[in-house]
Amino acid sequence: MNAMHPTRRRFLQTSLSAAGASVAAVAWAGEPPQVTRPRATDGDERYEPDWDKRLTLTIGHEKGDLNGKDDKVIQAGVDYVARLGGGTVKILPGEYRLRNSIYLPSGIRVVGSGPESVITKIASEPLPISGDSDWYDQEITVKDPAGLQVGDGIVIITKSPSSGARQVIKRTLVARSGNRFKLSDGLRENVWLSAEPICAPQFPLFTSEYTSDVTIENIALDGNRENNMHLDGNYAGCIFIQDCNRYTFRGVEARNYNGDGISFQICHDVRVENCHSHDNADLGVHPGSGSQRPVIRGCTLERNTIGLFWCWGVKYGLAEENRIAENGNYGVSIGHNDTDNVMRHNEITGSGKVGILFRDDARGEDFWANRNVVEHNRILDSGDEEGIAIDVQGQTKDVTLAHNEIRETRMPAHRTGIRIGPEAARIELMENTIEGFAQSVVDERSA
Image (cartoon, rainbow, N blue to C red; front, side, top):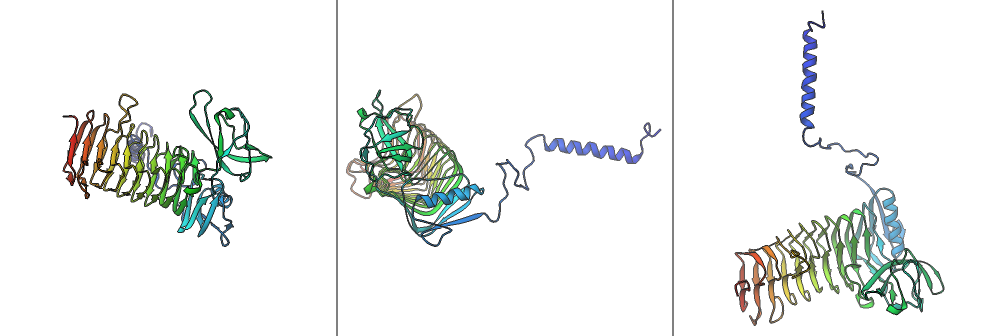
């Protein structure tokens, strides 16, 4: 009888259960519930509690948890902190002279003591290689091993026997017998005497590959430029990272490297904030090929060859409130497939050739710096007597130049405010102030 005629209590229980199921169905119909109380769960790399305290380990000359003056003590510190799941390595005042890069693991923070913490490197004298090595070998022979030590970071520079193209190999010396050195990894290139190969103790000061969630801040990096051979930003710099995610460089001084100051290649969500990159042989900040969503903010980039160089395929980046001054060629250079970036509220002064260059990177059907915005910048005194403040070359299109103050305070000579090349398309000029030039705007599309 009860099954045929349910009581009022059962009716309410059944109704509430159905309602609860309906609410749950609605909750799961779209996005899953938000994680509001994260816990440390084994294997869960996405959500982590915001712990009040993690390990901090100090590096010093005499008063640190670890003491020394070279790469070995700093490397020991970052490896120790990483082994415990992350934390901070505090580098106390003093000069630390490296014989190899500091290799950065994931999930750490390296903090200096401001300009009093100086990371520099030994001199780099090229040495001739004196024995042939094939691509599968893991050793080299040098004519005179004086100055080389086991543990040194080196670069091997040679040429392809088939094409003659330059080849650069970065390795660490891990063992020695006489003038033969074992390498940390196989060569994977032929190093033959016919190509006159050399090696030298040259390396980035901080480097990493395939890591994430790292911060470097409040420290001075000096590349000892006058005593080191040149190595470009595809391989090295005061900082060089590749295939990394979510790095932050804050309050870093990167100076005097015979190459780039700060270079990152195929790295995503990198932030360069309030850094000072100066007097480097090549590029101040180099968002490298394929890097997505870089932010360069509040930096001073001066007396490099190029201040800010957007490499290939850098997209959805932001450069704002930077001071870019006295760079030998270009204040800013942007080109091959660098799209959907914004440059705003920057001051770009005293560039050797051009303030902002949109390069003519003609390597494919549509590989130009399209869909970029340049707004509210101040661009002063660009180039020599033929100088150009903003030069839009190639088939660049869909670019907005708006509300910029573009001035020449020297004699007008043959200088140009904005030049638009004959193949550019849909370049929008909006309320720019252009003063002091022989020609304010040269639009070669209508010539």
